[in-house]
Amino acid sequence: MVFLVIIKEGFDMRYYKPKEINTKKHFLVGTVWPIEGSNGSEYSVEMHDKGFTCNCLGFTYNGKCKHTSQVVTELSTV
Image (cartoon, rainbow, N blue to C red; front, side, top):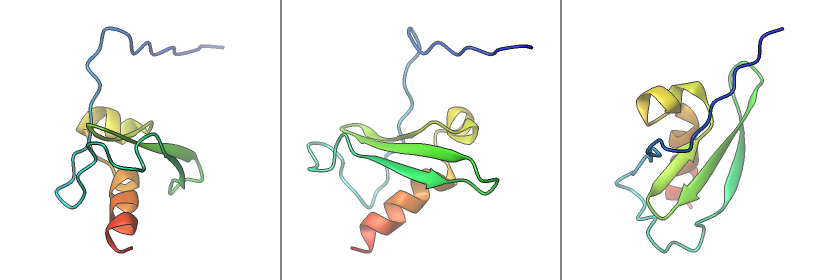
């Protein structure tokens, strides 16, 4: 068995900063939305003062993913 451990200490955190929502001091900062991925996995999208984060691999590489876009779209239409 092989285990992959990713340590985030010492790395700059990436944030998705959508134009539709100003997250700085937003009342939903700290909220985590569970989002089901296309393959059935569950991912967590969290709102921070600096923007959104997701724990999926796509967000790690691109700084944006369909999970963060889904949350932003849902919040923008409310």
